[in-house]
Length: 219
Ligand code: ADP
Ligand code: ADP
Image 1: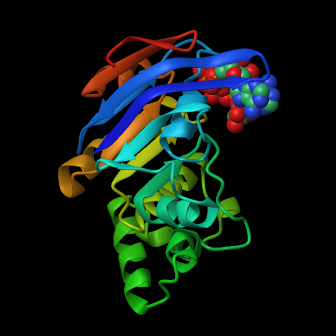
Image 2 (image 1 turned 60 degrees about the horizontal axis):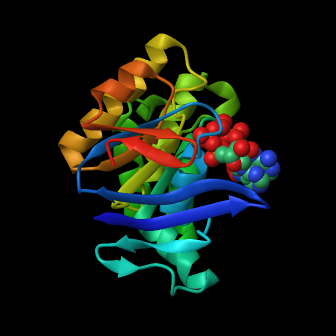
């Protein structure tokens, strides 16, 4: 589904990624671990087309994204890629339901089915009863589950998560991790997850270990 070929990236004179090769298969749950500064976030951003490599290429289903211009890339990303961050990034003035619908609205989909699907996704997260609530009325775990529903609204082929449980207590973290595996079972969803959570890293189908801009294991 996704292929990274010889990715290099530096910031000023700092070489952050030093030739990364990686293939992700459909319905895989892949964890990326490694100490702070290893390049995990940078790699995740490049795989998710939020950032561009200095050299190398990213292929989705065999098609290179490097030829896409800014607007086409933004459209491509919104359609095909979901993101979950450590801090949920929900918009505070909107309800859970509105937050979940937003990526669909941005893709020009305003039909009623979007709201129906958003409610279904909230129900899968055990969050149906919170649909009309704003983020400030929810716990951290609940907010993160809304952000998972939001990441799914455009039926992305792949979801990238950067420390999704980094801000959650053990119980909420475990619940979130179970949701990832449920979504893989129910939807065949593919996940690439940067994490410091050992339990999640080990539960994944494959654990990628990064150090100093290289993949040590699991590439
Ligand atoms: P990790 O996620 O493994 O902690 P990062 O990919 O966040 O690693 O960062 C790797 C290195 O690149 C760090 O030294 C970080 O300070 C540096 N870095 C990341 N993003 C930028 C940026 N936009 N500008 C300059 N340096 C950056
Ligand atoms: P992580 O917690 O995954 O290690 P960081 O805190 O290193 O992430 O980085 C968070 C964000 O800040 C990233 O988008 C990264 O690109 C950016 N960043 C990290 N280090 C630097 C830096 N030295 N200069 C500018 N931006 C940076």
